[in-house]
Length: 475
Image 1 (cartoon, rainbow, N blue to C red):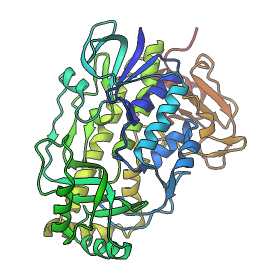
Image 2 (tube, rainbow, N blue to C red; image 1 turned 120 degrees about the horizontal axis):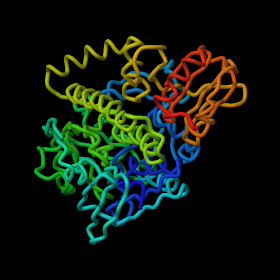
Image 3 (cartoon, one colour; image 1 turned 45 degrees about the vertical axis):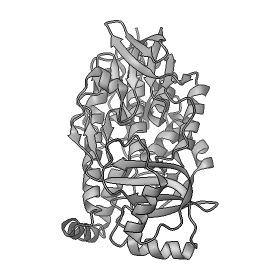
């Protein structure tokens, strides 16, 4: 029997597969597309996702193919500088197109031993006390202990589970695609600058070789957004918005997206869970979608592996919903707000001007960027030290860097006292005695996802917290 079936081979599913394989979990990824897509739905990684890749030893691969940016404008395209004092060792955005991210994560999952079945479309599922039966379009049936739906906003898994997906339908729609442009760069730049004074959902991003990523408001909301727009629809909307179609031609791909915001009522039903766009959809403002899904997988992977491997404490797997549902709800809220701020109507424009003034205060600017980049996330672990529930930034130690010690996906006790012990949990938690000038607390216990589970210096207090996240001590 397979331990976990992951339905969906996008960034969320592939990241989850890698996390599970770190713990020896047998994983099969089902991806209904026979070949990887060339459609570039996401353009890069935000700070927290960059940290995630660093924590797993993957960052060098991404840096090799990406480009680092320190530019503002992520919140509702309000042009403010990148904050100077963000609490991270990776204060930048990494520009890398989604097909490359998919490829790198697929390579990683395969290296670790995950099976990836392309052309494997899930069409049915049932579950009992012992496991899940997945039915594929070709009639194949697979049996697993758990199944995770990472199969996008139109999730088959979510539909088969009957999980509600409440929220707001799309009220506006935007066309997006990659195509060639037949006007000089200076003319394109001048027109774009003028149009974007009032229309923020418009733009041309150069891709090289005369190709551009083109974004323009649609005339209305399509009945079926799975049907791509025609090039003529792009031309018509460009003429309407900008007064010219810029001679666009030879499209690589064309698509559309709306501003719907919806969230699954539950992330878990028995042995079946939801992650990524299967659990939440929202507008792409701020570039948060791919990152949110990868971070879902990072939260879920070690917990599901603990359940499969038999040491998960009671409630650990349910904490995936408890922790990640509010995070996604906050993303839905901030994308709703951003879409309003990008409206051309007088009221939203007045609020936009006011918020732009407020963002001149460093604290406001940093707060909003930390929200977009997800380093402001704090899970509710109850009262205690101010670090509790937060992810810990990478810190320099005498013998290296903190994140270099987390590649295996285990818990970590960073002990500056040299007096503590994780005896009984050494098969799940690494004990590192080292010091850092950047860490003011005597010791911290980190979960495999890098969030602080305990901070202090008393062995008795540590022993009270270890079972909460890492189960009973080994006999």
